[in-house]
Image (cartoon, rainbow, N blue to C red; front, side, top):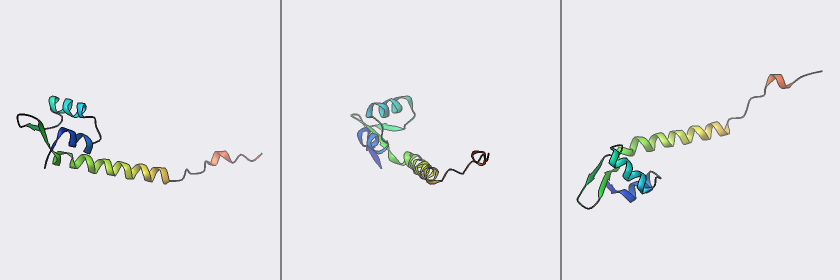
Length: 76
């Protein structure tokens, strides 16, 4: 499905100007229909999958307790 630059920017949480800059430099593929750029949203499927995986890994990391350090128990 093709989306406008504004819709794409909202989907990937970026400013519209940055999305346009990426289109001009070729980092985001887009089609110009004469008046506006249209971006195929399928090219961001991997991006969204990786973003979700990273969020899950961060949540696991936050919920993992810190192991007790054996050097702290200094018995005098």
